[in-house]
Image 1: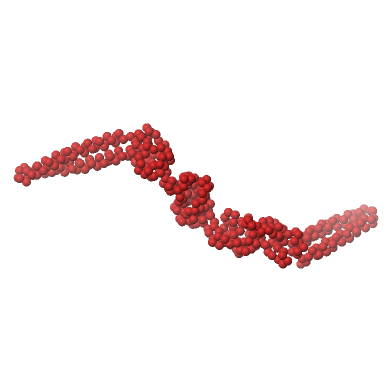
Image 2: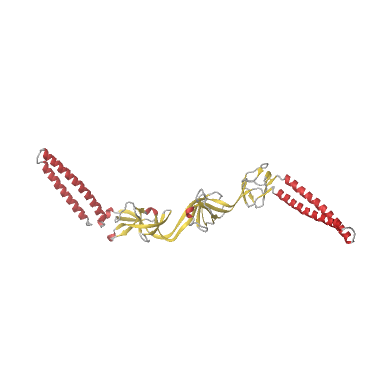
Length: 412
């Protein structure tokens, strides 16, 4: 065991110096004892031996100095203490989030299409940027053929009504004569059959009129949502058949969407809290997951999540956002700065201050087990309990038991 005093260090070095002096004295005396070749070889051999022994002694001296420096915690060693910063280890709420890039979508985005086959545009009643209401007329398509069909159906309907009126009159007259015993039963049945046939024709033509009127109405293109005309890519005289030519966006209801990697499928569910950062608008919105996709995207290997956000003039569809989805929370956890965490071949550890007698402070290594890491903080599962004085600056190259002097780090 090496005594823990500087006096021992001094005596040891003095002893080695005496040994060196003795060896060199012998060497000098030997050099003056003869001049033959045998004596010269002996002197060279003796010199080489002494040099080897000196190298070995230098190494032992250096090792002893290092060990003595580590073991000497007396007040006399305070002048070489290492300056470090410390902060108390505390327990606090700790949250871990999944950070994902996403975008804003509108709840109601409508791509207007004709109810029929489409047709040539005769009139346009909106332009890009106009506010529109549900049911508002947007376009008028060519309706010449539909109008002719409706007119022909209505004309046919009127003709059948006239025939039916005449047939009913004949039937009534024939029935009156039959009641008085005049005429034959065949004449009565024939008149009745004629009335029933015309009634059936009337119903059929009435349906034809309805169909023709509905076909005519398909030439009117209406908005099916309230919103703003985001896109109007059609002109008078062009064919309108849909295909995204008119886009109506309702920004009164917005949502943030993102793709969550499939390995989080058990952690992200409907109702999971989420914080949405919109850098361009300088806004942060606290919300929750309102919808999770039921399938995994083939290309991105994840599922879609949505979170509703309130309407705001600064928020636009397709605007970039960052969604911070909460997947772990602890109400009381031991949390330290992640940069203070060190590791070796087998363990992760930190250095804390330990107070010795006579006001001497030393660095003590604490082996820790970590939990979740988020941002600049890491959760400590074991190894620290709170209240320890964590070394947060100057911890590099510290060793167990090294004497330290401290400043309190108020920024941690």
